[in-house]
Amino acid sequence: MQLYVTYTSPYARLARIVVIEKRLEERVEIVEAKTRTPDSPYYRVNPSGRVPFLVAGGGLQMEDSQVICAYLDNLDGKPRLHPAATADWSHRRLEASARSMLDGIAVWAREMSRPERERSPTNLAHEATRTQRMADVFEGAVAHSVLQAEPNMAQLVLAVALETARARKFGDLTDGRPQLAAWLAPISQRPAMLATAPPRPR
Image (cartoon, rainbow, N blue to C red; front, side):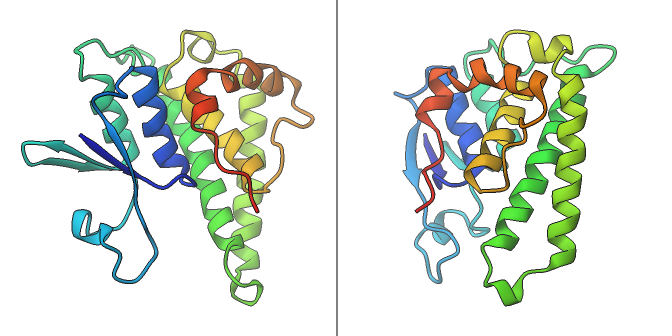
């Protein structure tokens, strides 16, 4: 299998983390894709140009980090990062909230990467305040049993969101949020998190 990624994409990072957590390194080849480049050869692999993108063989191809992460977690028939839905749907609810925060950070970072005259102050302010609200929510939510359990996708998405904010110079969302800081510290030291840490800005 080939997993097409960029090393700056937090969504591709999630798929790379699952590869390591599930010990699939010998089955999944990580391929760096060139995106946002005219006439990139990658567009012949994935016309949308988005990452991550998995070519699983037998004609099976898939886009979207949620789909890819679930597929990789289920390869051995023993998914452990995607707990079965429970009556209160806690895992999926918390994962969705963490992904919403990650989405806001990604939009903010993309806007900031534009030339200053092309940036939208309205969009930047909207995503900044939304992300701070979500961080306030997670300051309390990290005590939830789902976020205190064995590693799962809700935890990984939240951790990647927090580290992406730091890496993209949004700021440290754990500042002034001691419970969130204490929660992030150990998960950030997991081998899969360390091995996929985003490159330092130049």
